Image (cartoon, rainbow, N blue to C red; front, top):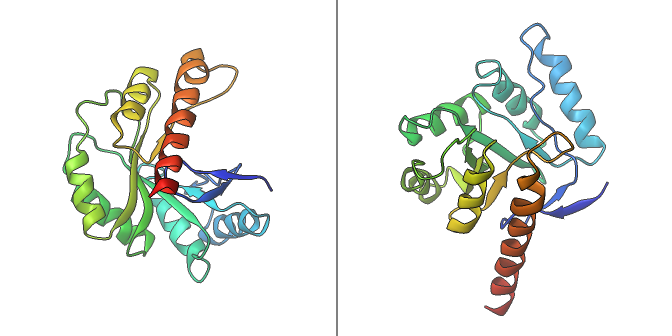
Length: 188
């Protein structure tokens, strides 16, 4: 398995991650077993959201991590961008059965300016999350998020059918900012 630095977190994440596998037509046990197989293969990054099968994904992830949390980086999402952050974080943690996750990101953020980073910062200070960021399908929002310095993790699509700005602009900028952050940490 290949591993690489994950944003500004200091975590070395597997190049492949475990994403949404929730399907309410599939019982919990086979879903958990699927995650365990991925973990056994060396994947150490798992991504979930409350909107994936109305919380079932979070329940699966929580069950899969019981007794196996060490070495895993968990990213969860804030789905309702127009609603207070704290209650959403608390509800996700309850479904997961965890007291904290590694990162919460604003999910599917169409616009960077309206995001409630001050509320997410309160969750960081309360120990409910270590890192913050966004996931977006808008290259302009991704670019703004990277430049803002507010995000430790920025999730965006990369592939042959995605907007070329992700590869030509956002990815190089994210790498540059990540390298700058690493250099700053090493100099302190």
